[in-house]
Image (cartoon, rainbow, N blue to C red):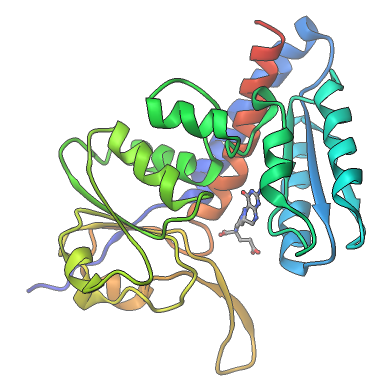
Length: 292
Ligand SMILES: Nc1nc(=O)c2c([nH]1)NC[C@@H]1CN(c3ccc(C(=O)N[C@@H](CCC(=O)O)C(=O)O)cc3)C=[N+]21
């Protein structure tokens, strides 16, 4: 077979474009609503990766004109303290979105906290009400990462109708909502995971392959159907031969780019879209809460 070089799906560029649109929307709505949109990102402890993500989110908020009400709590913060903070943010009219940065330290119960967020402010789309709406195919706030993947596929006019889509990974943050969104777009879906038997045979059938495992090199060229669309949601930090730290996905990029038709890079693919859909959800909540 002829060597084929995949078209790169540029998440950074699309994120930039959507952020400009959001900025314009905010400029238009703000005089009518009388305040900017507000987002509260809650982070507990000192996980350096989480701290970097939170900084990225706050920087993006500032860029488009969303006010940040974020708080950084020490590791010892109790469940009750956080529940009180969420209750106060639920009541705070200036706050349109609340996000609890995951993972939380072990002594905290993330599920209980997520359940306490007002579903109308649940910009992460992780509250059971919003997940239930997704299952039912009703409008609602959608989880940022899979929502961003759908937006990328739409931008590149990748049709999903009747296609075989395989999602590797079944997390509540990515895999499960991803599969439901693909189903909603009339793809035929398979959800696989780390313990799936003959994973390579399952993957080989995929017209659309979405991988969200966090294992570098999991997907190699031999596993991928020629002409497939490959979306890499995995993000791992590795040290290369020169001792440099870098980010890699689940996909062996250099080999898969020779068989796939479309491929997302890491970094610069899905990651920037995750942050952008968080901003999008916050602006959606802002206009809905203000009934404009
Ligand atoms: N409640 C909650 N919601 C989340 O959405 C959530 C979370 N917790 N915990 C952690 C994961 C991870 N996540 C990313 C966001 C942005 C990039 C991103 O912007 N990545 C850039 C690179 C950034 C860099 O250079 O470090 C890229 O891929 O190009 C990646 C990953 C959101 N998460």
